[in-house]
Each structure stands twice: as structure tokens, then as C-alpha cells.
Length: 174
Image (cartoon, rainbow, N blue to C red; front, side, top):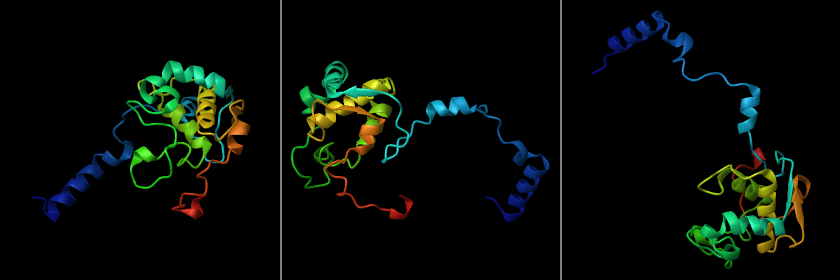
């Protein structure tokens, strides 16, 4: 059992030996360039979107190669969730929440694909592939025209169907 005298003695010993002076010396300091490679945040307004572009037609080809196994033909669902809305959200069931009826920002879709897909090889897609897949999925959800192309400027301007459907928990942080 730790008594107040024992705690004080351990604290004094730690100070005397310099335990608080340096830390555990684990890892190494990284450079700004190394950090920049991991700083891939994309904000709802599109700030942070990388250079690149893609079309829905290009995205359809990539989807057939890298996504159809889990998400099914044209995103109707498979071993992973469907990507097309089945109707309005009526419960807290995650399966009801899809791109067209839940996601408030197109940049969030881009960011998710970029960071997490394909699930067995996350962060393996190029920026052009992510733009193309985003365009394809937005076209399937009838958010954009099938012939539309996406880049940082056009993606940031998309107004998703559920943009105003979520309650902002911390409106002062926007």
C-alpha cells in the first residue's frame, strides 16, 4: 500500500535522478517533410483536397477492379454495406445510412475513400483514383451528373442531399 511518505520519497527520487528531464527516449524526431506525408486531413469545405481529378466513367472501372467484391455491382451491397440509399433513415441502424441519404459533405466521402479503401490496402489509391471513385459513387447516388468530372474545386462546391440534416454539436467550432 502506498503511504503519503512513500509517494513523497518516490517523487523526490524521481526528481533527484532526472527522470522528468528527458523522457523515455523512444522513437525519433521527424522532419516537416515526413510529417507532411501523413497530414492528409480534408475539411468539409474542401480545404486540404489534393491535386488530381477523375470522372465517374473512370471510377466505374476502378470500382469494378477494387470495390465490387465487397460492395456489390453498382454499390448495391455485398459483404460490406450498400452505397446507395434504400430510402429515408428511420432508425439508428447503420445499414440505412448511405452516401446519398446521410453523408453531409462530399469531401468527407473523398477523405474516407482516401484513408480507408480498399479495406485490405488502405491509402493505396492515387488521388486521381479517389476523385474518380468519388465521382462514380456520387453519380450512382444521383448527386452529380454521370458525365461530371471532379477535382478539388468542383468537389468542394457539391451540396450533398443531407447537408442540412445533421445537428451541429459544436457550432462555435465551425
